[in-house]
Image 1 (cartoon, one colour):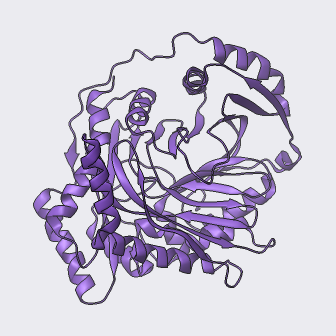
Image 2 (cartoon, rainbow, N blue to C red; image 1 turned 45 degrees about the vertical axis):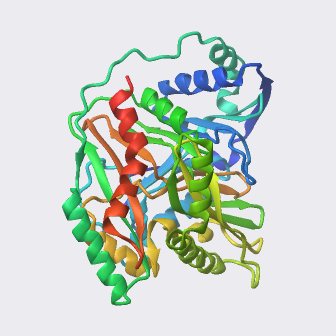
Length: 447
């Protein structure tokens, strides 16, 4: 049986939401209290833009909690099951698609070690949903719990101490692939490129800790504070957690418009303003970094064309450098227009997994990285997001993230880099350490 667990209430289509709007003076404190308050529920998704200045944004933050209906499955026919669930529910649903759902899209396998055991796909219909925009808070509760809105708002607003005093255990971080072995594996990728099997591959490695105990909320808050990315995510599904400071959008649907924003190209931030501006400028002109980005842009254009109206695929921004707290990133924006009859799941299925985390050509790259990587990616390099009742959606790319299985006491984070013909193994390794820096720091320094 391919469905590990599924709970779909057919009458969910009849459920309506009560919307109540409030405003507060101290929105930062309210957001902190809101996420702390949500820890009482077994299922939580928190999405936070950190007020990052971006063109495509529907809200500043959103909290979905308290599962009403849900779908949880492995990769077999995963998109068809999601299509059925999304179509029947016709409500807000939040959840994720793990990287290994690639096996549903193509004839691929995932046989590497998995220490986290996330399901391949999970979505839920929340009883309690809160959107924040500016200083305005909107509560969207299902009718069955709408009498709790007023009391919940007052309770959240008045919370005085939202800090958990539980201390973490000592954490010893290990590498799944050590430096010398990493060099050998990158060299094998380069050999594939020289033989013309691929043009680019995103090769990833895992850092992990066993017998580890952490406070997921405190770790997430610390990671988010030092990174402040536009697609931060806190995900809790019973004993499994995703704590993400991802800066990357995978794909968004606004009416008939589709937006994808792949990231390729990274440079560290520097203390001196002059030096920092120079390194950002150097990144924008770096031939290797630009070639990585352009190759993925071509891949995204091809993916979007599968559902786009003829001639509607366009590149709005090419290789633009954006600045975040930890790093500078090179981001491109590719858009398309679809017909009104196009099902939203078709758009996801025809573009998944995202090109920035695979390589080009996509299928060949996925086969090669599966052979060389030591760990099953699972939720890493998958996507977290939501659907609206009208079929719009927004999904991120799960990178710069910490994963935690509380039952197994297993903590993990992975990083990757795009390998092209111009790649130097030593520099690729250094870039991986740069990307891993924030996750390592918060794990060793959060309470």
